[in-house]
Each structure stands twice: as structure tokens, then as C-alpha cells.
Length: 166
Image (cartoon, rainbow, N blue to C red):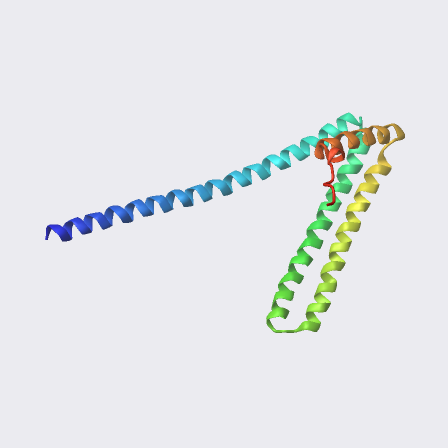
């Protein structure tokens, strides 16, 4: 009887320890997800601050800022629409794959990349519009800032040595 009681107590202790460990693991995963969301929120904050700092450094006028913001809002709405179409196509593609409908998959793949191309074109248009709004002085400043930013993002890029061929 004492052996059975000891075994039962040992099992209960082990199960409680394992469940506590699993709970901590899940808590850690939950914490990680929350940390990730916080980082995303901070990134949005920093990106908006970078946008403001850049506007300040280029000395944009109120009219220029308003034009950029209006175009940016329009661009964001267009991106939402295009990305939602891409997601719908992905769902249709999965269904076509399940049904082994290869002709439909080809058609959907073509549509998918058509939307991707539209997104890339819209990004180019957005950059072009921003560039066209700038005065010549602002363009020169922007080019200088881009050079500085590029060097900061790729430190030592030009110092890399290629291994000798043997």
C-alpha cells in the first residue's frame, strides 16, 4: 500500500512539474508574440519618425507634405486592394491544385504575377511622384542622404575581398 501511495505521489509531482514547464513554455511563446507585436508597433513609429525627419531635413513645404501624404494614402488603399486580390488568387490556386486543374492553376498564376507586377509599378510611380515634387536643391540633399543611408546599411561592402581561386 505504501508503494502504491509513493508511486501515485511521484506521478502527481512529475505531472505537475511537466505541466508547469509546458505552461512556462507557452507563456514564453505568448511573450514572444507580444514582443514581436510591440516591435512591429515600434517599427511603424520609427518609420513615421524617419518620414518626418526626412521631411525636416529636406525642408519640405506644407504643400509638398500634403501632396505626398495624399498620394501615400491613395497608394496604401491601392496596395490593400491588390494584396487582397493576391490572397484570393492564392486560395483559388490551392483549390485548383487539390482538384488537379492545371489549366486553372496556370491562369491563376498568370493573374497572381500580373498583380505583383502592378504592385511593383505602383511603387515606382510613388517614388517618381515624390521625386517630381522636390525642388532641385531638395533633390541634391536627398541624393546625399541616400548615399549616407546606403553606406550605413552596407558597411564594408566595398572592402570585401574575394577568395583566391586555387
